[in-house]
Image (cartoon, rainbow, N blue to C red; front, side, top):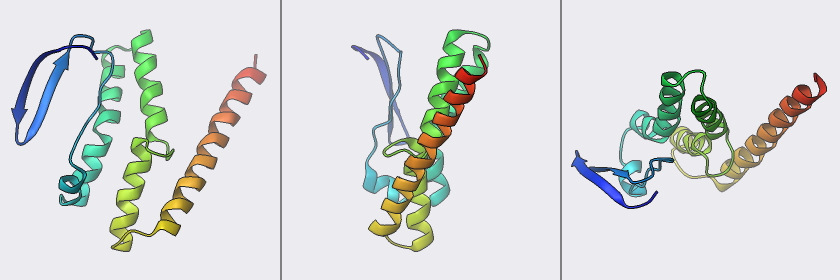
Length: 130
C-alpha cells in the first residue's frame, strides 16, 4: 500500500515495494498465464500462500507469524476467488480440456460449503473446549 519506493522488472515480471509493505498482491495477464504449463500456473497461483508460510516460519512465535499462517490457511480454501479456488479451476479446466460452467459452479459451491463447515466446526470446538 502507499507510494512505490522501488521496482524492477525480471523476465517480463514487474516487482515493487511500497511505502507500507503490509500486504501483497499479484496482478497478471490472465491470457498469458493460461498459455503457461499447468505446473507453472499452479505455482504462480500458490506463490502468495508460499510467501505467507515463509514469512510465518521466519517470524515464528509472533503475531505477524500467526497472521501469516491464518492468511495462508484461508487462501488455500476453495472459496470463490481465493488462491485455492483459482488453482482448482486451473486443474479442472486442464483435466476437462475446456471450461465447464456446471463443473466449475459445483466445485465453487461444494468448496465453499465445505470450507464454511470446517471453520464452523473449528470455532465450535475452540469455544466449546473453554
